[in-house]
Length: 397
Image 1 (cartoon, rainbow, N blue to C red):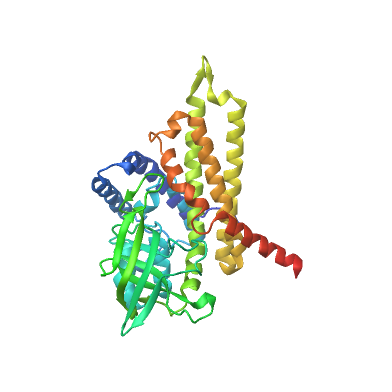
Image 2 (spheres, one colour):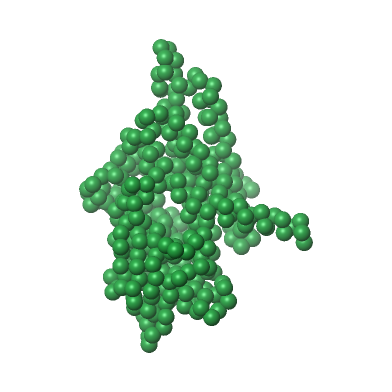
């Protein structure tokens, strides 16, 4: 691997880093504000500035208004934007829209791209991805109870989904449902576009996450599809390819997530070190003088560096040999980076003491909304088992 960052990419990263620190950090206190509309208006103003700076939609196709950065280039971008909970959103590369854009770009028809993909890349609308179900294991996309049955020229969808992130205010959902129950295990489900104003699309609530329900983009929806009827032309790709498409979506998506988590780690580490050198614990003594705190800082620095290099290596492999050949590396970064994130956040909160438990810093927000990193997109245990099986296969063959 060549660790040299191309000059153009370095310039982009530096511009984004400066913008995040100067323009977005000051807005973070409004994340939990009761006046969400005012907060959203502020974010929209920042988005317009980003577009004027020609830094909008860094990882999306140029023909639809994005910057067209490679996966490796976007990895560096995602690390910088991850420093703030609003970074990816303000720059137009936030999940779940980013993954939906990838799917629409690869599998969408010309009509679907014009109606959904273009305005999504433009940031004029939002979307959600509706796969996880209340009573089914979220780590196993092969187990779905939601069905889409053909009736005349329509699909009639019935099912109960939750953690459809950002459903509140979304223009449409990409729903994963069983269309071909008679097929083999991996070819039963399909992905279907469902506009949120369709009769039978019922957003029940925004799920409280550690006491915070959130609003708009910053929420996780529970949805009941009740005889929800959409035209069969709303299917993405061919019937039965839902699982295959989900895997296409998750590979690059994990790079985005993991580098975002590295950005969170960097922010928490910076806050932790700043707190350690500023906090007086006795006359003439700062918290940083304690060897235990010094050990924590050294351990966190090493963990962040190791995790970061693993993610960049996985991104390099995807760019070089493809996501299928990099499945082991993709799984490994998922649990390594998620655990590094938890460790660094926990240590940073400990160093901050009572301040870390309050909402006076961004740490408590990160803790509430990023603890799920070890659960979503496949729980740690699932990925560890998968990695172990791949390794052991080489020894038993």
